[in-house]
Image 1: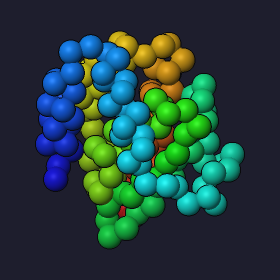
Image 2 (image 1 turned 60 degrees about the vertical axis):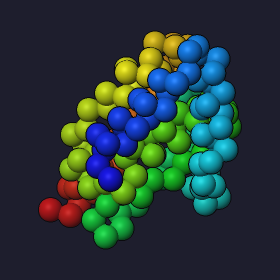
Image 3 (image 1 turned 90 degrees about the vertical axis):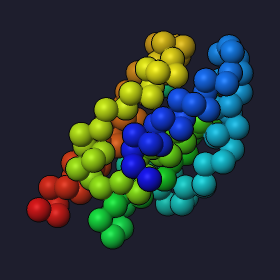
Image 4 (image 1 turned 30 degrees about the vertical axis):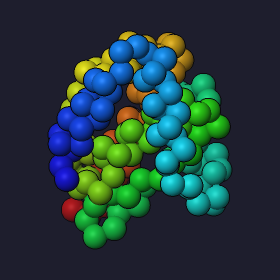
Length: 140
């Protein structure tokens, strides 16, 4: 499934909720569905700078597509990274590098996060794009 189809699905899912408390609860649900990251990646090397809570992110390239795994010590943040992984997992590095993550604005995510969580969201996106860039450069 392509990136925009995944984003459109998320927009549709979030549209059924009337207020942000329901959306936060949905993020918490999503955090529980995020597959566990291998403990060897829960080190400072994989920690995302710029997040108030701890977020560990790893990416690998398998058969030409990126495979992301992540964890966080904060449940809402873990739900946010679960959304990002849902959209960007199993995509080509070039597609991740050039992605327009319009779902973030459409569901009102960034506007409804605290400034520190909003900075963390941007840091997560930046790190995922940096992984994509690194794999793209390595495979040229």
